[in-house]
Length: 116
Image 1 (cartoon, rainbow, N blue to C red):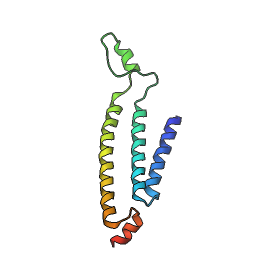
Image 2 (cartoon, helix red, strand yellow):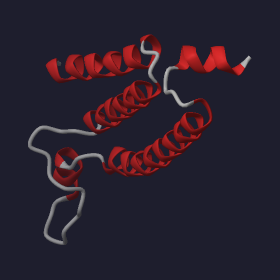
Image 3 (cartoon, rainbow, N blue to C red):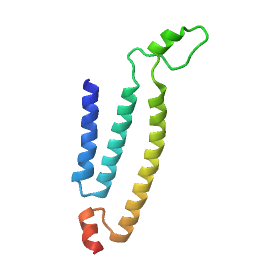
Image 4 (cartoon, one colour):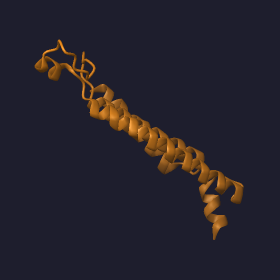
């Protein structure tokens, strides 16, 4: 239960960075921290203490296998989520670099002031 609490603290930390900070790079870091917290939570859902890999060998009993093996679906979902998170991170960095080229700052309040 402690690991779920620590995971929620990690998510709230990322949410705080996303909402409270004005610097664009800090917002990107907060979004990445939130992504890692969500991935960790999904992995924790499929975790089993003393679990075995989800590979059925010919000499294994099917009931024992079903009771002891970990769930492979969250692992596959997290692999997909990592790829999507990396692509969104690259997009956020590219957009922030374009904003820096145009406004010469990463401060969102300054960008809003210079925009209009």
